[in-house]
Image (cartoon, rainbow, N blue to C red; front, side, top):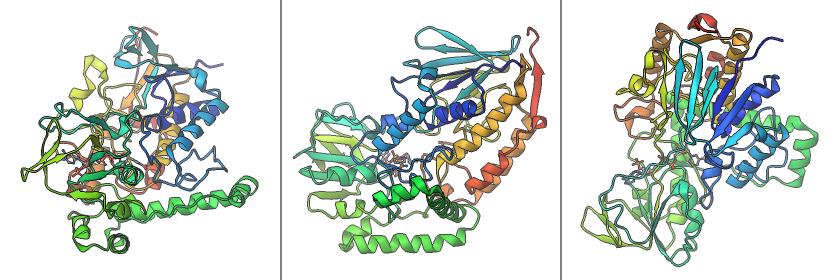
Length: 489
Ligand code: NAP
């Protein structure tokens, strides 16, 4: 039998687990997953805020090879998704392949021996032929840089670090942020708080959510006539592909989407003054489009105010806005998003000649051939790397494209100890030029969001339908890579 390369996967979220599943399903067994937390799940372990759910329906937001016939509803809640990940991991006996509580701090490639040395916070050095960081784009919460943020004397927490020991019943709560997280927890907490003040910097584009509870009949059909669930998956996938095309290739298709969002706002927000506040003043699709039937009605309740004056500072007792008003509150919830453009941070990754990956990407921002390979960083293949996030669609579909590609690389390197590959610089440059050309015409250029970094470059999003990415990554092509052999193997 030919010697398999050894593989280290960093992270046990959908990306890392999906990669491991792809290897196992293809009888490739020489891998270990390093996970910094005590449990698997990634964002679905971390984000436990009230109302946490997925705004992509579960028939699509699940592994294609592991359909689940008994999802309680179409848009699953966090606990059900986390449970699904655990169940699949156990089914494939993956849990025993994960080292929990192990945080990678540094990794360096040794050109002489062709191996990665991966250092963890417990002082251990792991070695591997192939390194697959699968640490997500949304795993590091971002707090706003507001003066006085540390002076607040009440409870304060980020949405991804929800403090469940704080009972919000009868409390005055400030919510900062109007993204996909806030739109879920605001309706969930509004009924119990005394007053909720939403500090809104940008109004969200909100579409109706075509949610439904699955009945026993659905479950029976999905189980015994699996093609029915496959049909739903296909319908949902097609819907999101059409939205993706509206964002990228066929902007004219945005008009009906905007009309639906406008209608939804008109129907759900009868109060004209409130509706004016909740009407976005930037191009639709620039920030992530949101799905909710509960967000607008919650904001219309008498115990809610929407504050659009900019926040000046946080004070010991609450939040001061630029008009000098101090809003006294008991609790502040920061729904202010994640450090999404800082790929692979805070890990230090060193490639050929000791080059540091963060320096290679500075100041312009992260980039990689197919979102996976960087010239000079051999046998490093990223999952959910630069420009692989979707503006519309299921990230799991994108991750499956990536894991299939990386599996082909692993096969290629099997039986070739000490062989290493990284994208050829001109191939990566051609890829990036193509991406940037396509990104030029997308709405993501017309506002600020976590899709763009400080230099204005869109580092996160894939500019097209997900099927285009699947096609681009369908076949590993050795000629796109510089291939060398270690001197000492
Ligand atoms: P986000 O989309 O980055 O939203 C952050 C919010 O905080 C924005 O409204 C932003 O305003 C606001 N903000 C940041 N700093 C501020 C400041 N100093 N003052 C006032 N407002 C401030 O974060 P998120 O809602 O956590 O979502 C992040 C991503 O996670 C989503 O885009 C999505 O990909 C993922 N997610 C997915 C789901 C799902 O159901 N699948 C659910 C939750 C999250 P501006 O817009 O003006 O910058």
